[in-house]
Amino acid sequence: MGEDKSTYTDHVISLLVFNHPGVLSKITSLITRRGFNIDSIAAGPTKEKDMFRLTIMVKGDDRSIEQIQKQLYKIVDTFKIMTIHPARKVEREIGLIKVKAPMGERNEVLQMVNVFKGSILDSSTSGFVVEITGSSDKVDSFISLFPSNQIVEVARTGIVAMDRWEKQ
Amino acid sequence: MGEDKSTYTDHVISLLVFNHPGVLSKITSLITRRGFNIDSIAAGPTKEKDMFRLTIMVKGDDRSIEQIQKQLYKIVDTFKIMTIHPARKVEREIGLIKVKAPMGERNEVLQMVNVFKGSILDSSTSGFVVEITGSSDKVDSFISLFPSNQIVEVARTGIVAMDRWEKQ
Image 1: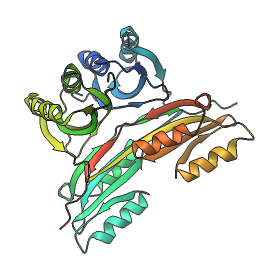
Image 2: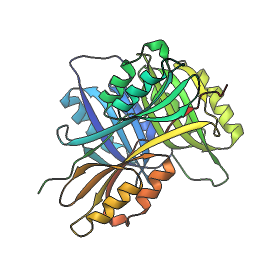
Image 3: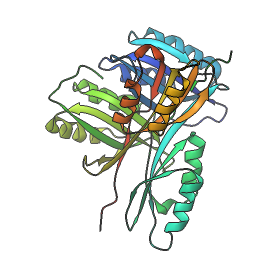
């Protein structure tokens, strides 16, 4: 996390790491010490019981990203760094959005949820909790439909990404 | 991240933090230094441009979690700590699962994706990339349907959670 530099581009770093205490803070320290912005981070279990997979979105130039990847390998808990090819990746994120929808405005909100193929996770007389799944852009677009004071809360997972299958 | 202690229970810590360099590593260091296991972490943008929302799943006893929350407030970049009520929360996670599905086994895999209301994000003659959205348990269940050697890769966001609307 840090200031935005407009010449930088988005990169996805995907890591398999051993589930040891402190590994997450070692990795995030290394990246931020180098002056990179972490745009989002998602860390969850993987099929191996003792490992985690981290997906980190950072802004930076190509050369610096390569250097970071080399240094990440020096962290003993790093098992594997996966390169995600921008042209071949699938990426997904969830946004939970708590939006006000008093009587008279409910249909309009529900229509928008439909257009975005979202789901209603909770409904009260005051409003909804909406789930939007897709690219980060899609989640951004949904949120931007509403004036800021209509949005009560937003929680986003950050993206996870994976290469498509190699075509044969 | 760390060893499992079976007497501990899952807690969701949700934080609004200012988007300053190093804030993520300060927070993860604080939690892991105290000996807590981070089960998953999800960090993404929120409706305020200069803030991030972190959702952290940790295992620990209730008293220690309270202490951690107090200490998190001492990190200057922490703006707000939201208590997520276990009984009133909505939670969601995405798992991307790259699964082998050669000819002859494809229908079986597709049926499972249907049962779990998942989506096929990519398809090749070798297999699929499947998206499963729901609780962590649901993602776990889908993965456990397949023998380990049929699963090529798993990437999960970690959960995001939010309180439902107060009923009036």
